[in-house]
View 1 (tube, rainbow, N blue to C red):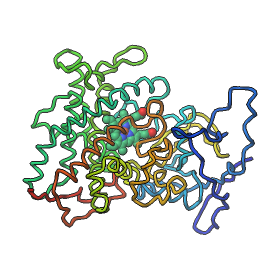
View 2 (cartoon, rainbow, N blue to C red):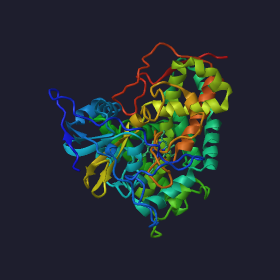
View 3 (cartoon, protein in one colour):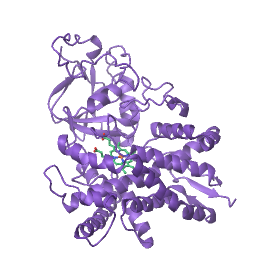
Length: 471
Ligand code: HEM
Protein backbone atom coordinates (compact mmCIF):
# COMPACT_ATOMS: atom_id res chain seq x y z
CA UNK A 1 0.00 0.00 0.00
CA UNK A 2 1.52 3.37 -0.93
CA UNK A 3 2.38 5.68 1.90
CA UNK A 4 0.30 8.81 2.21
CA UNK A 5 2.58 11.85 2.19
CA UNK A 6 1.32 14.80 4.15
CA UNK A 7 2.57 18.36 3.74
CA UNK A 8 1.64 20.33 6.84
CA UNK A 9 1.09 24.06 6.56
CA UNK A 10 -0.19 26.59 9.07
CA UNK A 11 -3.66 26.58 7.51
CA UNK A 12 -4.09 22.92 6.80
CA UNK A 13 -5.61 20.70 9.45
CA UNK A 14 -3.21 18.45 11.30
CA UNK A 15 -2.45 15.35 9.23
CA UNK A 16 -4.37 12.26 10.10
CA UNK A 17 -1.99 10.07 12.07
CA UNK A 18 -2.07 6.43 13.13
CA UNK A 19 -2.39 5.92 16.86
CA UNK A 20 0.99 5.80 18.62
CA UNK A 21 2.71 2.42 18.40
CA UNK A 22 3.61 0.46 21.48
CA UNK A 23 7.36 0.82 22.06
CA UNK A 24 9.44 -1.75 20.18
CA UNK A 25 11.10 -4.08 22.63
CA UNK A 26 14.51 -3.48 21.00
CA UNK A 27 17.22 -6.08 20.85
CA UNK A 28 17.34 -8.47 23.78
CA UNK A 29 19.30 -7.22 26.75
CA UNK A 30 21.87 -9.40 28.50
CA UNK A 31 20.01 -12.08 30.41
CA UNK A 32 16.72 -11.30 28.69
CA UNK A 33 14.97 -13.78 26.35
CA UNK A 34 14.89 -12.68 22.70
CA UNK A 35 11.76 -10.70 21.85
CA UNK A 36 9.48 -11.01 18.82
CA UNK A 37 11.53 -10.34 15.70
CA UNK A 38 10.69 -7.16 13.88
CA UNK A 39 9.89 -8.12 10.28
CA UNK A 40 11.21 -4.79 9.04
CA UNK A 41 14.59 -5.08 10.77
CA UNK A 42 15.49 -8.64 11.55
CA UNK A 43 16.82 -10.65 8.60
CA UNK A 44 14.46 -13.38 7.34
CA UNK A 45 15.08 -16.75 9.00
CA UNK A 46 17.36 -19.03 6.99
CA UNK A 47 15.64 -22.24 8.19
CA UNK A 48 12.87 -23.08 5.66
CA UNK A 49 10.63 -24.74 8.30
CA UNK A 50 10.29 -21.46 10.18
CA UNK A 51 6.98 -19.83 9.23
CA UNK A 52 7.18 -16.87 6.86
CA UNK A 53 7.38 -13.37 8.39
CA UNK A 54 4.14 -12.15 9.95
CA UNK A 55 2.00 -9.99 7.67
CA UNK A 56 2.74 -6.28 7.88
CA UNK A 57 0.73 -4.85 10.72
CA UNK A 58 -1.23 -1.63 10.44
CA UNK A 59 1.33 0.03 12.76
CA UNK A 60 3.84 -0.19 9.92
CA UNK A 61 1.74 1.99 7.65
CA UNK A 62 2.95 5.41 8.70
CA UNK A 63 1.70 8.64 7.24
CA UNK A 64 4.99 10.39 6.88
CA UNK A 65 4.84 14.18 7.08
CA UNK A 66 6.67 16.07 4.36
CA UNK A 67 8.02 19.45 5.42
CA UNK A 68 9.30 22.30 3.29
CA UNK A 69 13.03 23.14 3.51
CA UNK A 70 13.99 22.96 7.20
CA UNK A 71 17.58 24.18 6.97
CA UNK A 72 16.87 27.31 8.99
CA UNK A 73 14.94 25.36 11.63
CA UNK A 74 17.87 22.97 12.05
CA UNK A 75 20.31 25.88 12.34
CA UNK A 76 18.16 27.76 14.86
CA UNK A 77 17.13 24.69 16.88
CA UNK A 78 19.69 21.93 16.21
CA UNK A 79 18.91 19.87 19.30
CA UNK A 80 15.13 20.23 19.39
CA UNK A 81 13.99 20.38 15.79
CA UNK A 82 13.74 16.67 14.93
CA UNK A 83 12.29 15.63 18.31
CA UNK A 84 9.73 18.43 18.40
CA UNK A 85 8.62 17.71 14.83
CA UNK A 86 8.32 13.97 15.48
CA UNK A 87 6.30 14.62 18.64
CA UNK A 88 4.03 17.12 16.92
CA UNK A 89 3.18 14.63 14.17
CA UNK A 90 3.44 11.52 16.37
CA UNK A 91 5.84 9.90 13.97
CA UNK A 92 9.34 8.41 14.27
CA UNK A 93 10.33 9.92 10.91
CA UNK A 94 9.53 12.72 8.52
CA UNK A 95 10.76 13.97 5.20
CA UNK A 96 12.11 17.44 4.56
CA UNK A 97 14.72 19.28 2.56
CA UNK A 98 18.05 20.32 4.03
CA UNK A 99 19.98 22.80 1.93
CA UNK A 100 17.47 21.96 -0.82
CA UNK A 101 18.18 18.21 -0.92
CA UNK A 102 15.54 15.72 0.17
CA UNK A 103 16.35 14.25 3.58
CA UNK A 104 14.73 12.00 6.15
CA UNK A 105 14.88 12.80 9.87
CA UNK A 106 14.30 10.00 12.39
CA UNK A 107 14.18 9.39 16.10
CA UNK A 108 13.85 6.44 18.49
CA UNK A 109 15.30 3.00 19.15
CA UNK A 110 13.67 1.29 16.14
CA UNK A 111 14.85 4.03 13.80
CA UNK A 112 18.36 3.81 15.29
CA UNK A 113 18.46 0.05 14.78
CA UNK A 114 17.48 0.50 11.14
CA UNK A 115 19.98 3.38 10.71
CA UNK A 116 22.87 1.20 11.91
CA UNK A 117 22.13 -1.52 9.34
CA UNK A 118 25.05 -0.89 6.99
CA UNK A 119 23.37 -2.70 4.11
CA UNK A 120 20.86 0.16 4.13
CA UNK A 121 22.78 3.24 5.23
CA UNK A 122 26.29 4.23 4.13
CA UNK A 123 28.55 6.87 5.64
CA UNK A 124 30.32 7.77 2.40
CA UNK A 125 29.57 11.42 1.74
CA UNK A 126 27.24 11.61 4.75
CA UNK A 127 28.89 14.54 6.54
CA UNK A 128 28.74 17.85 4.67
CA UNK A 129 32.22 18.56 3.26
CA UNK A 130 32.75 21.83 5.10
CA UNK A 131 32.02 20.21 8.48
CA UNK A 132 34.06 17.11 7.67
CA UNK A 133 37.14 19.14 6.71
CA UNK A 134 37.32 20.62 10.22
CA UNK A 135 35.76 17.99 12.47
CA UNK A 136 37.19 14.67 11.24
CA UNK A 137 39.30 15.61 8.24
CA UNK A 138 39.10 13.52 5.08
CA UNK A 139 40.29 9.91 4.90
CA UNK A 140 39.33 8.86 8.43
CA UNK A 141 37.35 5.90 9.75
CA UNK A 142 34.12 7.93 9.82
CA UNK A 143 33.76 7.77 6.02
CA UNK A 144 34.56 4.06 5.55
CA UNK A 145 32.09 1.21 5.02
CA UNK A 146 32.05 -2.58 5.21
CA UNK A 147 35.32 -4.55 5.51
CA UNK A 148 37.55 -1.44 5.23
CA UNK A 149 35.62 0.14 8.09
CA UNK A 150 35.75 -2.91 10.33
CA UNK A 151 39.47 -3.34 9.74
CA UNK A 152 40.27 0.29 10.62
CA UNK A 153 37.77 0.26 13.47
CA UNK A 154 39.44 -2.74 15.09
CA UNK A 155 42.55 -0.59 15.54
CA UNK A 156 40.52 2.03 17.45
CA UNK A 157 38.74 -0.55 19.58
CA UNK A 158 42.08 -2.11 20.53
CA UNK A 159 43.68 1.26 21.27
CA UNK A 160 40.77 2.12 23.57
CA UNK A 161 40.62 -1.17 25.48
CA UNK A 162 39.98 -1.05 29.26
CA UNK A 163 43.75 -1.33 29.90
CA UNK A 164 44.43 1.62 27.61
CA UNK A 165 41.64 3.61 29.28
CA UNK A 166 43.35 2.96 32.63
CA UNK A 167 46.59 4.31 31.18
CA UNK A 168 44.77 7.38 29.93
CA UNK A 169 43.15 8.08 33.31
CA UNK A 170 46.57 7.60 34.96
CA UNK A 171 47.96 10.25 32.59
CA UNK A 172 45.18 12.65 33.70
CA UNK A 173 45.98 11.84 37.33
CA UNK A 174 49.68 12.69 36.84
CA UNK A 175 48.87 16.09 35.37
CA UNK A 176 46.05 16.98 37.77
CA UNK A 177 48.14 18.25 40.79
CA UNK A 178 49.61 21.11 38.73
CA UNK A 179 46.10 22.17 37.63
CA UNK A 180 44.71 21.84 41.16
CA UNK A 181 47.43 24.22 42.39
CA UNK A 182 46.72 26.63 39.55
CA UNK A 183 42.99 26.57 40.41
CA UNK A 184 43.73 27.29 44.05
CA UNK A 185 45.99 30.23 43.30
CA UNK A 186 43.88 31.83 40.55
CA UNK A 187 40.94 34.00 41.52
CA UNK A 188 38.52 33.02 38.77
CA UNK A 189 39.04 29.84 36.80
CA UNK A 190 37.22 29.07 33.55
CA UNK A 191 36.77 25.34 34.08
CA UNK A 192 36.34 24.52 30.39
CA UNK A 193 39.63 26.18 29.37
CA UNK A 194 41.61 24.48 32.14
CA UNK A 195 40.15 21.03 31.46
CA UNK A 196 40.78 21.31 27.69
CA UNK A 197 44.45 22.01 28.38
CA UNK A 198 44.76 19.24 30.94
CA UNK A 199 43.18 16.73 28.56
CA UNK A 200 45.38 17.83 25.66
CA UNK A 201 48.46 17.11 27.78
CA UNK A 202 47.05 13.80 29.03
CA UNK A 203 46.05 12.70 25.51
CA UNK A 204 49.51 13.45 24.09
CA UNK A 205 51.23 11.78 27.04
CA UNK A 206 49.08 8.65 26.64
CA UNK A 207 49.47 8.54 22.86
CA UNK A 208 53.27 9.15 22.97
CA UNK A 209 52.95 12.39 21.00
CA UNK A 210 55.72 14.72 22.25
CA UNK A 211 54.39 18.02 23.60
CA UNK A 212 56.65 20.71 25.05
CA UNK A 213 55.33 22.91 27.86
CA UNK A 214 55.36 26.00 25.65
CA UNK A 215 53.33 24.20 22.96
CA UNK A 216 50.40 23.17 25.18
CA UNK A 217 48.22 26.24 24.63
CA UNK A 218 48.62 26.30 20.85
CA UNK A 219 48.00 22.56 20.39
CA UNK A 220 44.98 22.75 22.69
CA UNK A 221 43.60 25.61 20.58
CA UNK A 222 44.02 23.55 17.41
CA UNK A 223 42.27 20.46 18.79
CA UNK A 224 39.45 22.47 20.40
CA UNK A 225 38.77 24.46 17.22
CA UNK A 226 38.20 21.20 15.33
CA UNK A 227 35.16 20.15 17.39
CA UNK A 228 33.96 23.52 18.64
CA UNK A 229 33.79 25.50 15.41
CA UNK A 230 33.32 22.84 12.69
CA UNK A 231 29.69 23.91 12.28
CA UNK A 232 30.29 27.67 12.63
CA UNK A 233 29.80 30.23 9.89
CA UNK A 234 32.10 33.05 8.72
CA UNK A 235 35.45 33.96 10.28
CA UNK A 236 35.20 31.45 13.14
CA UNK A 237 34.82 28.63 10.64
CA UNK A 238 37.79 29.80 8.57
CA UNK A 239 39.89 30.16 11.68
CA UNK A 240 38.95 26.58 12.60
CA UNK A 241 40.00 25.42 9.09
CA UNK A 242 43.36 27.08 9.66
CA UNK A 243 43.66 25.39 13.07
CA UNK A 244 42.84 22.03 11.45
CA UNK A 245 45.55 22.56 8.82
CA UNK A 246 48.09 23.41 11.52
CA UNK A 247 47.03 20.36 13.57
CA UNK A 248 47.30 18.09 10.54
CA UNK A 249 50.79 19.39 9.75
CA UNK A 250 51.91 18.87 13.37
CA UNK A 251 50.72 15.25 13.51
CA UNK A 252 51.91 14.43 9.98
CA UNK A 253 55.36 15.45 11.18
CA UNK A 254 55.07 13.02 14.11
CA UNK A 255 53.99 10.16 11.80
CA UNK A 256 56.89 10.93 9.44
CA UNK A 257 59.45 10.96 12.28
CA UNK A 258 58.16 7.68 13.74
CA UNK A 259 58.29 5.99 10.36
CA UNK A 260 61.79 7.31 9.70
CA UNK A 261 62.98 6.11 13.11
CA UNK A 262 63.79 9.72 14.15
CA UNK A 263 61.26 9.59 16.97
CA UNK A 264 61.44 6.53 19.22
CA UNK A 265 58.14 5.70 20.91
CA UNK A 266 56.94 2.47 22.53
CA UNK A 267 55.67 -0.01 19.95
CA UNK A 268 52.36 -0.44 21.77
CA UNK A 269 51.73 3.33 21.98
CA UNK A 270 48.83 4.81 19.99
CA UNK A 271 51.18 7.04 17.94
CA UNK A 272 53.24 4.03 16.86
CA UNK A 273 50.26 1.74 16.22
CA UNK A 274 48.58 4.35 14.01
CA UNK A 275 51.83 5.21 12.20
CA UNK A 276 52.38 1.52 11.37
CA UNK A 277 48.75 0.62 10.62
CA UNK A 278 48.24 -1.12 7.30
CA UNK A 279 45.02 -1.27 5.30
CA UNK A 280 43.34 -4.46 4.12
CA UNK A 281 45.78 -4.69 1.20
CA UNK A 282 48.76 -4.53 3.56
CA UNK A 283 49.63 -0.94 2.57
CA UNK A 284 50.70 1.65 5.15
CA UNK A 285 48.17 4.47 5.42
CA UNK A 286 49.38 7.58 3.61
CA UNK A 287 50.89 10.17 5.97
CA UNK A 288 47.78 12.33 5.76
CA UNK A 289 45.31 9.56 6.63
CA UNK A 290 47.50 8.32 9.48
CA UNK A 291 47.58 11.87 10.88
CA UNK A 292 43.79 12.11 10.58
CA UNK A 293 43.42 8.88 12.60
CA UNK A 294 45.89 9.92 15.30
CA UNK A 295 43.97 13.20 15.60
CA UNK A 296 40.80 11.04 15.77
CA UNK A 297 42.21 9.91 19.13
CA UNK A 298 43.58 13.22 20.45
CA UNK A 299 40.72 15.56 19.49
CA UNK A 300 37.84 13.64 21.10
CA UNK A 301 39.82 13.14 24.32
CA UNK A 302 40.06 16.93 24.58
CA UNK A 303 36.34 17.12 23.73
CA UNK A 304 35.55 15.22 26.94
CA UNK A 305 36.10 18.67 28.55
CA UNK A 306 32.61 19.52 27.29
CA UNK A 307 31.09 16.62 29.22
CA UNK A 308 33.16 17.52 32.29
CA UNK A 309 31.73 21.03 32.21
CA UNK A 310 28.28 19.45 31.90
CA UNK A 311 28.94 17.31 35.00
CA UNK A 312 29.96 20.46 36.91
CA UNK A 313 26.79 22.13 35.64
CA UNK A 314 24.66 19.14 36.72
CA UNK A 315 26.28 19.11 40.19
CA UNK A 316 25.42 22.80 40.49
CA UNK A 317 21.82 22.27 39.37
CA UNK A 318 21.35 19.14 41.52
CA UNK A 319 23.32 19.72 44.74
CA UNK A 320 21.34 16.92 46.37
CA UNK A 321 23.44 14.44 44.30
CA UNK A 322 26.78 15.76 45.57
CA UNK A 323 27.26 13.52 48.61
CA UNK A 324 26.45 10.34 46.74
CA UNK A 325 28.68 11.34 43.83
CA UNK A 326 31.52 11.83 46.33
CA UNK A 327 31.01 8.67 48.36
CA UNK A 328 29.38 6.05 46.18
CA UNK A 329 31.34 4.76 43.16
CA UNK A 330 28.29 3.12 41.63
CA UNK A 331 26.16 6.24 41.93
CA UNK A 332 29.00 8.31 40.39
CA UNK A 333 28.76 6.19 37.25
CA UNK A 334 24.95 6.60 37.10
CA UNK A 335 25.40 10.36 37.48
CA UNK A 336 27.86 10.47 34.59
CA UNK A 337 25.52 8.37 32.42
CA UNK A 338 22.60 10.69 33.17
CA UNK A 339 24.74 13.67 32.15
CA UNK A 340 25.60 11.89 28.87
CA UNK A 341 21.92 11.13 28.32
CA UNK A 342 20.54 14.60 28.91
CA UNK A 343 23.16 17.20 28.05
CA UNK A 344 23.46 18.52 24.50
CA UNK A 345 26.64 17.41 22.78
CA UNK A 346 26.05 15.88 19.33
CA UNK A 347 22.45 16.51 18.21
CA UNK A 348 22.34 13.93 15.42
CA UNK A 349 24.43 11.78 13.16
CA UNK A 350 23.96 11.35 9.42
CA UNK A 351 24.07 8.71 6.72
CA UNK A 352 23.06 8.19 3.09
CA UNK A 353 20.59 5.60 1.80
CA UNK A 354 22.65 2.92 0.08
CA UNK A 355 19.93 1.42 -2.12
CA UNK A 356 16.15 1.74 -2.22
CA UNK A 357 14.29 0.04 0.62
CA UNK A 358 11.02 0.35 2.48
CA UNK A 359 10.78 0.72 6.24
CA UNK A 360 7.54 1.16 8.14
CA UNK A 361 5.87 1.57 4.76
CA UNK A 362 8.08 4.55 3.83
CA UNK A 363 10.31 4.34 0.77
CA UNK A 364 13.91 5.29 1.46
CA UNK A 365 15.35 6.35 -1.90
CA UNK A 366 18.98 5.69 -2.79
CA UNK A 367 21.21 8.72 -2.19
CA UNK A 368 18.87 10.42 0.25
CA UNK A 369 20.42 11.89 3.39
CA UNK A 370 19.16 10.45 6.70
CA UNK A 371 19.58 12.17 10.05
CA UNK A 372 19.27 10.13 13.24
CA UNK A 373 18.41 12.25 16.27
CA UNK A 374 20.81 11.21 19.07
CA UNK A 375 19.75 13.90 21.52
CA UNK A 376 16.02 13.28 20.95
CA UNK A 377 16.34 9.48 21.22
CA UNK A 378 18.04 9.89 24.61
CA UNK A 379 14.94 11.81 25.73
CA UNK A 380 12.32 9.73 23.97
CA UNK A 381 9.43 9.14 26.42
CA UNK A 382 8.66 5.79 24.79
CA UNK A 383 12.08 4.60 25.99
CA UNK A 384 12.67 6.69 29.11
CA UNK A 385 10.38 7.00 32.08
CA UNK A 386 10.00 10.69 33.01
CA UNK A 387 12.46 11.35 30.21
CA UNK A 388 13.20 15.01 30.91
CA UNK A 389 13.96 14.51 34.62
CA UNK A 390 17.56 14.29 35.86
CA UNK A 391 17.49 10.95 37.70
CA UNK A 392 20.84 9.08 37.85
CA UNK A 393 19.15 6.11 39.59
CA UNK A 394 17.51 5.17 36.29
CA UNK A 395 20.85 3.60 35.34
CA UNK A 396 20.86 1.28 38.36
CA UNK A 397 19.66 -1.70 36.27
CA UNK A 398 22.81 -1.39 34.12
CA UNK A 399 21.15 -2.76 30.97
CA UNK A 400 21.45 0.16 28.59
CA UNK A 401 19.76 -0.34 25.26
CA UNK A 402 22.30 -0.26 22.39
CA UNK A 403 19.82 1.73 20.31
CA UNK A 404 17.89 3.69 22.95
CA UNK A 405 20.82 5.26 24.81
CA UNK A 406 22.95 6.74 22.04
CA UNK A 407 24.85 9.89 23.08
CA UNK A 408 27.86 8.52 21.19
CA UNK A 409 26.05 6.46 18.56
CA UNK A 410 24.38 3.04 18.67
CA UNK A 411 24.88 -0.68 18.10
CA UNK A 412 28.10 -2.61 18.66
CA UNK A 413 31.10 -0.26 18.38
CA UNK A 414 33.21 -3.00 16.74
CA UNK A 415 30.73 -3.26 13.88
CA UNK A 416 28.84 0.04 13.50
CA UNK A 417 30.11 3.61 13.51
CA UNK A 418 29.34 3.86 17.22
CA UNK A 419 32.06 5.76 19.10
CA UNK A 420 34.91 3.50 20.26
CA UNK A 421 35.75 6.05 22.97
CA UNK A 422 32.73 5.63 25.25
CA UNK A 423 34.67 3.70 27.90
CA UNK A 424 37.35 6.41 27.91
CA UNK A 425 34.71 9.14 28.10
CA UNK A 426 32.89 7.55 31.04
CA UNK A 427 36.07 6.81 33.01
CA UNK A 428 37.51 10.29 32.50
CA UNK A 429 34.18 11.88 33.46
CA UNK A 430 34.07 9.76 36.63
CA UNK A 431 37.65 10.69 37.44
CA UNK A 432 36.95 14.40 36.88
CA UNK A 433 33.70 14.57 38.85
CA UNK A 434 35.35 12.74 41.78
CA UNK A 435 38.06 15.43 41.80
CA UNK A 436 35.49 18.20 41.60
CA UNK A 437 33.61 16.97 44.65
CA UNK A 438 36.51 15.61 46.71
CA UNK A 439 39.66 17.47 45.74
CA UNK A 440 38.53 21.04 45.01
CA UNK A 441 36.77 23.39 47.36
CA UNK A 442 35.06 25.83 45.00
CA UNK A 443 32.08 28.09 44.66
CA UNK A 444 30.20 28.97 41.51
CA UNK A 445 30.06 32.79 41.29
CA UNK A 446 27.17 34.55 39.53
CA UNK A 447 27.51 34.05 35.77
CA UNK A 448 25.48 33.05 32.73
CA UNK A 449 25.02 29.27 33.10
CA UNK A 450 22.46 28.99 30.31
CA UNK A 451 23.44 26.43 27.70
CA UNK A 452 23.86 27.97 24.24
CA UNK A 453 21.43 25.68 22.46
CA UNK A 454 22.16 27.06 18.98
CA UNK A 455 25.84 26.14 19.28
CA UNK A 456 27.37 22.67 18.83
CA UNK A 457 28.23 21.66 21.50
CA UNK A 458 25.91 23.76 23.66
CA UNK A 459 28.31 24.90 26.37
CA UNK A 460 27.22 27.31 29.10
CA UNK A 461 27.75 30.89 27.97
CA UNK A 462 30.56 31.60 30.48
CA UNK A 463 32.20 28.15 30.12
CA UNK A 464 31.60 27.49 33.85
CA UNK A 465 33.61 29.82 36.04
CA UNK A 466 34.63 28.62 39.50
CA UNK A 467 36.34 30.32 42.43
CA UNK A 468 38.47 28.06 44.58
CA UNK A 469 39.06 28.43 48.29
CA UNK A 470 42.52 27.52 49.48
CA UNK A 471 41.56 24.82 52.03
C1 HEM B 1 33.74 13.65 24.15
C2 HEM B 1 32.83 12.75 24.18
C3 HEM B 1 32.48 12.05 22.91
C4 HEM B 1 31.34 12.17 22.19
C5 HEM B 1 30.13 13.03 22.53
C6 HEM B 1 31.48 11.31 21.04
C7 HEM B 1 30.49 11.13 20.10
C8 HEM B 1 30.65 10.36 18.98
C9 HEM B 1 29.63 10.16 17.99
C10 HEM B 1 28.21 10.73 18.04
C11 HEM B 1 30.16 9.38 17.02
C12 HEM B 1 29.49 8.97 15.72
C13 HEM B 1 28.50 7.87 15.89
C14 HEM B 1 27.82 7.58 14.58
O1 HEM B 1 27.88 8.37 13.65
O2 HEM B 1 27.20 6.53 14.49
C15 HEM B 1 31.53 9.11 17.38
C16 HEM B 1 32.39 8.39 16.61
C17 HEM B 1 33.73 8.27 16.89
N1 HEM B 1 34.36 8.64 18.05
FE1 HEM B 1 33.53 9.54 19.63
N2 HEM B 1 32.70 10.71 21.08
C18 HEM B 1 33.36 11.12 22.20
C19 HEM B 1 34.58 10.68 22.65
C20 HEM B 1 35.46 9.95 21.91
C21 HEM B 1 36.76 9.53 22.35
C22 HEM B 1 37.31 9.78 23.75
C23 HEM B 1 37.36 8.93 21.29
C24 HEM B 1 38.73 8.33 21.17
C25 HEM B 1 39.71 8.60 22.00
C26 HEM B 1 36.43 8.94 20.19
C27 HEM B 1 36.67 8.46 18.92
C28 HEM B 1 35.69 8.32 17.95
C29 HEM B 1 35.95 7.74 16.63
C30 HEM B 1 37.28 7.26 16.09
C31 HEM B 1 34.70 7.70 15.98
C32 HEM B 1 34.42 7.18 14.58
C33 HEM B 1 33.90 5.75 14.68
C34 HEM B 1 33.49 5.17 13.35
O3 HEM B 1 33.27 5.90 12.40
O4 HEM B 1 33.40 3.93 13.29
N3 HEM B 1 35.28 9.57 20.61
N4 HEM B 1 31.80 9.69 18.58
